[in-house]
Structure formats: structure tokens, C-alpha cells
Amino acid sequence: MTVNLAIALLHYPVYNKHREVVTTALTNLDLHDIARSARTFGLERFYIVTPSPDQRDLAARITGHWQEGWGAGYNPDRKEALDIVRVCNNLKNAVNDFQAGFANPVKTVITGATDRPNSIAVSQLRTELEQNADPYLLLLGTGWGLTDDCFEAADHILQPIAGTGSYNHLSVRSAAAIMLDRLRGTR
Amino acid sequence: MTVNLAIALLHYPVYNKHREVVTTALTNLDLHDIARSARTFGLERFYIVTPSPDQRDLAARITGHWQEGWGAGYNPDRKEALDIVRVCNNLKNAVNDFQAGFANPVKTVITGATDRPNSIAVSQLRTELEQNADPYLLLLGTGWGLTDDCFEAADHILQPIAGTGSYNHLSVRSAAAIMLDRLRGTR
Image 1 (cartoon, each protein chain N blue to C red):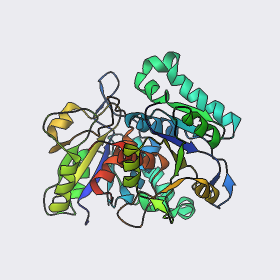
Image 2 (image 1 turned 45 degrees about the vertical axis):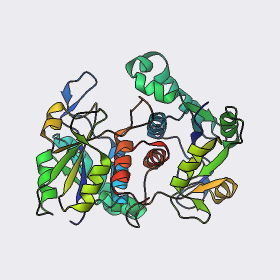
Image 3 (image 1 turned 90 degrees about the horizontal axis):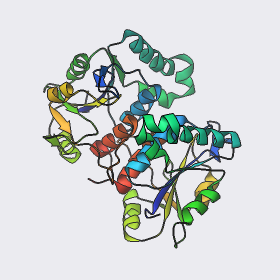
């Protein structure tokens, strides 16, 4: 691999509305939208992470439909986006797959909608991506966000995207698009 | 109104895959995602435009579900986003509604994924939004994009969002999020 940024969408361990730790269900449009954004901004890997075998089968069926046979011929742009998707049962396996393309160790960068201490600005991460050869894996949560344990375990915490006021409830699809544009977009 | 930028999602007149002019069907997640992005970046209006009465009823039902009764109590953040949605049968009525809040005439700014002559950079539009009091309505197409007639009729054409290579197939939800961040986001 040549691009030192990849993205992972985690369906576990995340909070639900009542702050219970759950596995969320795969959302078809998360997969398509984030794959298309990732491909547009040049990423070579987008990991779908879920411990549920049924959900991994579903993710594989969705990507397969557009990569082979009828779907691939009907919409080749969609095939090109889904080519970068890899389905994993946990984060460790996603990190290991991404690691295989690089000599330096993978650094995980966790994202969320809440301000947390010791977080880094998106502009700082952009500079790091441009100036060093370390591979970075951007972690996105589903549901009501990744658990506190995930934030403690990550190498970096990314500052949330600031809107213009106190309302900040972007969908994970929109947040991913904005982060990738800020990290790799041309202006 | 105090914010001189609004957004409109047009379901007609747009091309389909075979370059026929069609009315596309409303996509539930377009409505939610773009409303949440628009609200996060401080917009006060998001217009859903479709000539189909059935589709307008559907849009009104979706927004109503989260604005009244069970949905409003279950998810007040969603209510707050959907409060800015207005459903219109054509672009003219969307322009008229937005115009009512301003003295200067509304300028339409059309968006698409293809490079076109005489288009303005997003950064230039950001400067105009900050420096003058004219209200701007950002037009987003569905399907395979707004028709050439729409591009000829608009006051400005916005340059497409550049990725890192030739692949440029963002979903309309992702494109809207990136444009609003570039136009109004804090860095």
C-alpha cells in the first residue's frame, strides 16, 4: 500500500442511547457512502468491523453484489469504491491487515463528537500524514459512539468537527466525509 | 432569518443513468443527513424540492414523525435538525420562501461533480458569504445530477469537490457535508 491513511467503521464496542455497550447493525448506506468518500480521497482500505458473523456475511454480500456480475457491470464506479472494503471481526485484525503494507507501526486515531483532553487537531494530523511515513488508521464509531475504553486504548484522539454553534450531530457518513476532506482534500 | 446561506435538494429536473430527465424518489437518509449537517453548520433552511405530491407528503410525514409526539421525545436532536426543513413543489417556491427573510435578491449557486466553465471556487463563495449580505441558496441534485438547463439558469456554478485522483463519486449526503464544512466550518 502507498497511502498512509485508512479508515475503520466499528460496530462494537459502542454505546446505545442508554450507554449500554452493544453491537450495532450494519447500515447499507454507511458502507456505500464511506467507501465512496474514502475512494474519492485516495484511501486504499476501508475496514468494516463487527463481531457478528451474520453481519460480516451481509457486508460481504453487499460488496460482492457490486463487485461481480450484474452490479459490477451496471455501476463500475460503485465497484471501484467497494474494492477497498475489507470486513473484519475485530479492530486488531483490521490493524494487522493495514500493518502488512508498512514498516512503521500503525497508529490508531479515534474520533467522536465530544471534546476530550489531549486530543489533536485535524490540521495537525494532516501535517503528520504529509510529513512522516507512519500509517494512521482512523476509527469511526456507530450508535452513540465508541466506548471510553476505546478512547483510552487509541494512540491519538481527534478533535471533533466544530460546527457553528452548540448543535453537533453529524451522521457518521457526513463526519467521515468531512474528516477525509480536511485530511486529504485539495483546495 | 439571519444566516445568508440555505440549501436545497432537488428531485427534479435531474438526469437518470441514461440521461433522461426524471423525478427521483425521496431518500430518507438524504433528508436526515443533510438536515443534521445543515443544522450543525448553522443553516436555518433546508428545502426538499419535488413536484410529486405523494413524495412531498412522505417528506412531511418523515419530518413530522420526529417533530411531534413519540419521535420528538425520543430524539430531540433529530427534531432540532428537521425544524429547518421546508418541503416545496419547485425551486421558485423555495427561492421565494428564503427571499422573504432578506432585502437583497437571493442568488442560486448550483453544484455538480463535473468541471464546468465559469465556475467559482468554494473559498471564493465563503468570502462572499462572509463579506456581503446577499442570501445564497446552494442547489444539490439527486440521481445523475441537475440538468444543463438548471446550470444555465443558476446565478453561480460551484467548482466540484476535488478528491486526490480521477475518482470523484461522493454521495449527495457526503458532498453536502463537505461543502457546508468548507463554507462555514471552523478550523
